[in-house]
Image (cartoon, rainbow, N blue to C red):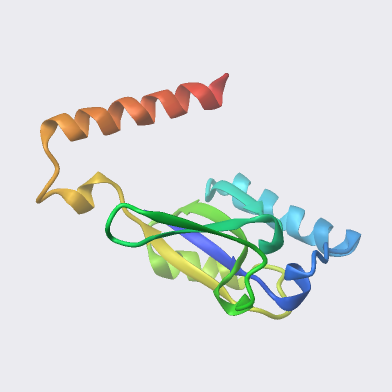
Length: 141
């Protein structure tokens, strides 16, 4: 199972605060442990919402762009990981080892085509397979 581990933003991260050298070293050591265990597939931090945008869709085909910053920091993300583990409980156990002192982190299972089994056609599945092959090839080059 794949999981997205979502690190919630704080007022400090939204103000652009970067980790100290010690905090960065702790996180790098933790990430290295995840990689060595075959858990971590991807992960990065995100710039504050002031450097982002939201696109809202009205249900009729029109969209509106809202530039950051966004005021409600509890809804914002400061970083993420993609992990591969057998269960949610395994992801929780790995997260408990993270070097966080405060804040909140959310774990959500990532679903693939299997979640759409009732509606996916062979054509759509073939298209998905082609796209995943292209992504894998691009990552290798």
